[in-house]
Image (cartoon, rainbow, N blue to C red; front, side, top):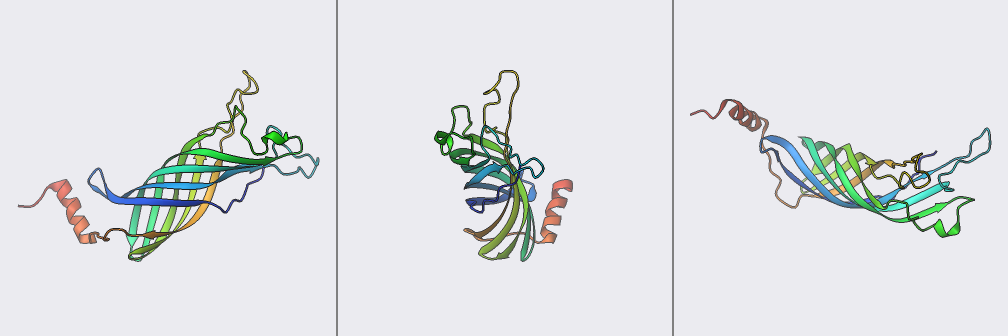
Amino acid sequence: MASVFSPNYLSITYTKHSKMFGTIPNFALVLGLATGTEGFSFTENPETGYTDNYDDVQQCSIRVFEIPAMMQLHADADPFKFMANIGVYGGWRQSVSRSGPQLATEWTTSFRDYENRLDYGFQGGLGFALMFSPVELHFNCNVRWSWSSLNEPDYSSKYYYKYAYPLDIFATVGLHFQITKRRGKTRAELKKEAYEIVYGKEN
């Protein structure tokens, strides 16, 4: 099986910076709407000349719409920001395009009854940003691991289950706008706040 390159991932996100549990700084919640593709492709075996398939499909591309929800930890070193995101997503497999010499034409752009269209799973990644208030340029590398198999596992046999969980790696470049005034605390202020949390405020 070969990887599939799909340069068509688009998203819009909203990031809310706050403190985790009211005490841990450098924390944010990220919510968004996204669309892209997931799929698979089989290549010819050079020794046998045979090309494998999955239910008569040799190449497949699925358009998906998603709602990611992640928590973010970030460290700022003006003008840089370093980020780590982890969370989940829910989505819908909206359309499909596939091919194969044995594939019936009715299934080239249609889903079968036993194929799952509801999509959900894990999403996370690492990135950095350049901050030029009120604009930030973000560079991220993310992993999206679906927990929803492409098909019902027992569709072909009640004894032998078949699973297919898409795993995608994607790099993104994004332009972010600060819609509220950017504010923060100096290192000395953060140290003082941490001291007061542990030892209490001085009289």
